[in-house]
Length: 141
Picture 1: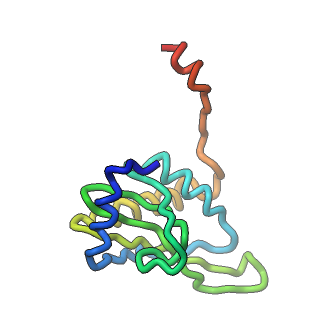
Picture 2 (picture 1 turned 180 degrees about the vertical axis):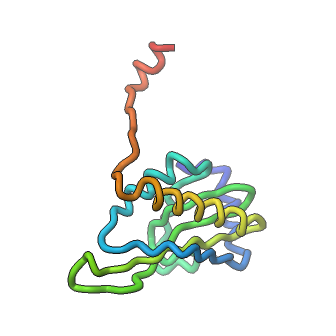
């Protein structure tokens, strides 16, 4: 969850011209976008899900995987490269858009996360996770 103190940074970041990072990640066929988001949430400091109103000038999708750091914002977007009746023949390309004074560096960190997910985790499914009840976590200390 994004801290309310970060909201001014998100609003301020919108005043900057976006840095668009094309990192050449084209994913064939059907992939589970949720797995990428879980991976990013567990590996990127400052990760959150950015929800915007319909027709937002900032983000094309209404909900985007995003991160906030150093007064800058970066979010993940994609486009269909090839659409086809057979899902195995479809291609999707990822992009990172960054806003703010550290947009290039932040977008590159996000792109590194996506590349790592692609090379190490995309085919293996969800990363291992352990869920512990908060009362047991406190009792175990």
